[in-house]
Length: 444
Image 1 (cartoon, rainbow, N blue to C red):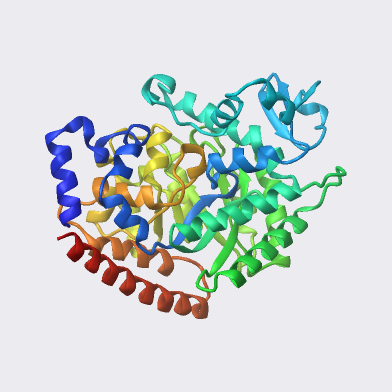
Image 2: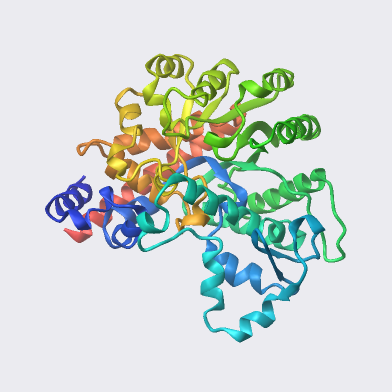
């Protein structure tokens, strides 16, 4: 509380240096220089329940590692650059390919320019991305830019291991990762089915857990893209088969993409109702500023479809009856403060509706969504905004502990896995508090 109060007081006196009120791109360096962030960095985070795999890893790591792999190519098309390790099908519009290793020799700033293709960071985001449409076009384009490189089996293995390493170094002990599970390919151009991708995931997870015994591992929420009905129906069919083959690892289904322009849950209600009883649903819902539009039905239908959690739930505050349903049915909200800010839903995070959710004791967990795309490695930055912007000034360690424990309680770990996780978390939390106590005494 001493650290928090000092930082808030300083921000009150100098509003242009108040990270709690600034856009993350302007606040990041201030956050890192303060005393609250290092404290939160050491804090056990429990589980991370909302992160997209192909945007989870630091963009700097991607540039320094994946783009230096032998054989990476860049093709320039009418839709923008695509990075790959193979010759793509004609639909990508690639007529000529450039070797990244050769291009790099032509420019000293090549890596800096390359990183901009997978990072939204901007000194003046309000000028670069003046409206929601601009930022979403750039955001979705970044997935298209690197998705094919991500699907190269050797790159995929390195990337997923790094994803787990970044979670572990940020004191996350378990994650439920959203993935479209790309069809991987090798250096000979051979394409493997999604079942192969799942087995790769399982092997990487198994080896990481073996090396770091207090990490509980990950499970996958399979995702379909919500922009097209046929695509959604195909994704649901794929999920059924993957869940049947890997029921303990492919745990549930979700739809992803810009909600404002995507298809509603109601439009694929028959397919969603036809899922096996063992399948769980984790729907994005209310990731919008609109009110009274057809998109409002996504929150209602997510609840009626017995979703386990709601991704974002930003617009839920406009629907008090649905808020009551969420509380009564104990549906947790996966709140991603920085994502909502970067994607232009809210500028000053003190105005984020999660402040209302906290005041009403709506179940909530702090998540990071796509941190690699905005230079926010791990989930600590989101926890910073949770305690400094969303929470009341007098809220401290008790609130943080509640959010951390929520993350395990609202996960879909089995009873035995959850009990083991809570035991590890309890031990690590006590050690964290003792260490923090001695650090504060030493400073005094």
